[in-house]
Length: 277
Length: 157
Image 1 (cartoon, rainbow over the protein chains, first blue to last red):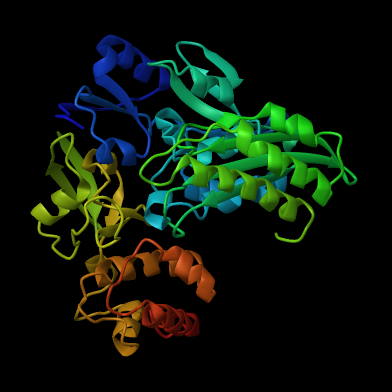
Image 2: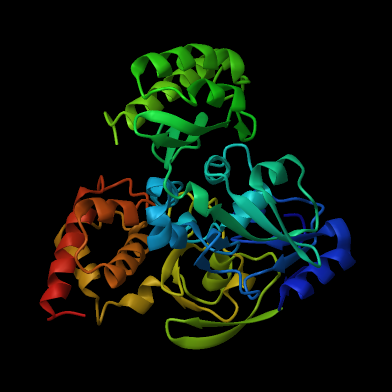
């Protein structure tokens, strides 16, 4: 932060939105606040706290599971409903990424709002087909993948919906890291639906490339309708390094990341064929 | 701005700056048992319980604590009335230089409040925020297992 001169506890979504509209780009909504403290933005002078707006909830509905934007990763990891969703991958990882203190602070709305390229929650939510519920005077809902492509300043993230139709699929996440708590050199998430041993729907997401989370429908097409066999995954593992845009930064070279892309697909094979859990 | 925080069961009004972190406010107000070290949320030395859950006070804006409850290691037990976890840390050699211990004990307290019979893996996961460069962690894990056993017997609080 630069010099924060005002901290505003909003009493409702309407109150928060009106305040942000009044102040313009010098105001920022605050979730857990971790990123705001660590990476100070000199343009921000007012923080609008949403913690009193009733956004700390997890609710199972006919449409799926909705997670309020102020819900922490720890709370998500302990939810019985989320532990059942898509094999429990989201619950497992929200209980393990970063560390316990941060998991108690980081909110799902915060990570979506900041969407840092190294974030592990956002790409997994994209793979799970999550939708984001927004408030800008009125409520609307849109795919998370679309929201992170074109963020809308001033709009409040009210919650995230995990769609009911994906509840029976298998979620998968693989973080390539140097140490357990390290940020990912490459992040790979997937959601796979099967009919017997044939894959019927697949979503593949790479992040930390070092770019942001991106869906790779071309790779997914190569898996849909195919059997869960080594030949299927081996062919996609050969194609993937040419299709996934990776780059070089201080953490890894593009060449190294291309090898990780290949390994990621083979890790998915092991998971889906039951060799690894 | 003024915030109302209950620290170790006592209500306080603190005057804080909008961008001040909880660690700095607590230490300024005399809670010197809360240790500052990395100031980037990595090491766990500054761990306090916010409404019973461990957080990095170096990254928690003090304004976020308004209306909430904070517990420091002194609120868990002190020299005159040590908590079973504190005794177990001493008994098991989990205290060497001691700098990380307030944070480690605070994390352990939150774990045992929610899970009185944790596995070794659950202890390591619950205390993965707390760096210790002296003990190598083994003694800390043994201390928490020991404290959990003592507390389950019911003769310690």
